[in-house]
Length: 279
Image (cartoon, rainbow, N blue to C red; front, side, top):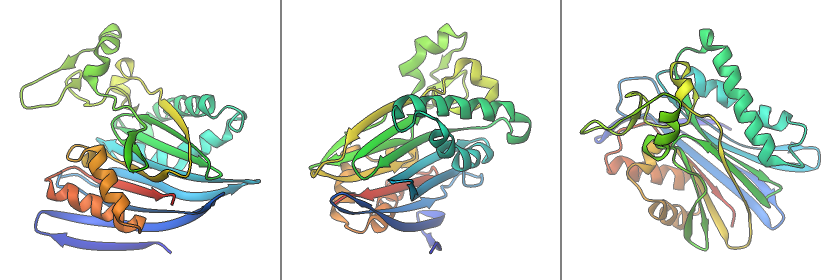
């Protein structure tokens, strides 16, 4: 059953939502937990998430995602409702997940742009993970939300942070520019701090929405998967996050602890975190 827990702390005014669940694998039970906290910025919470197991025919799928919105809540809310369903509607998903994920990301972005009069001018990053029968993991992302896997205690970054400087030549070839103002992060056209995103119609001619995709087998040494928005990764390394998540067996408590550590490290952004424990 869902539950909402609220707390106040001296380092931040926060509202936290957390929950947990579990699925099955060929070697036992897979558990997950999540926690979302609003940051100090003077705007509504813009992070959305998905964390659930679903049964489709003979397959069990774990669906996990973090959507980190900017400007408005409408685009991440749309992604929460539609992106996974669009992926699973692709006819070739069971044969070619890579192609299906890529096509669904592009189709979803086009749908967002075509409904911009209703959804507004904002956008969202995304990191998604699909766990098939507890054995194969497919991770995709646009933007700077990140997925990190722990294998034998070693952190493996499963995603690529799409930072403007890293894709400067592509942006400039499309007629855009990357600003590097003192005291600020690099931004596309002086506005957006990521080079790939859903939505953002005014910048779309200079932005990409195609995801980076990676897949990996889940073996006996795979213990933890962490998905989180950049509010966590700005103040914490991959290995630090893995070390915290591994030592707390309850994944919901692990997600809460990761956010607590990020707040203690003075993260001011909205923070969303999902922890999946395999063993």
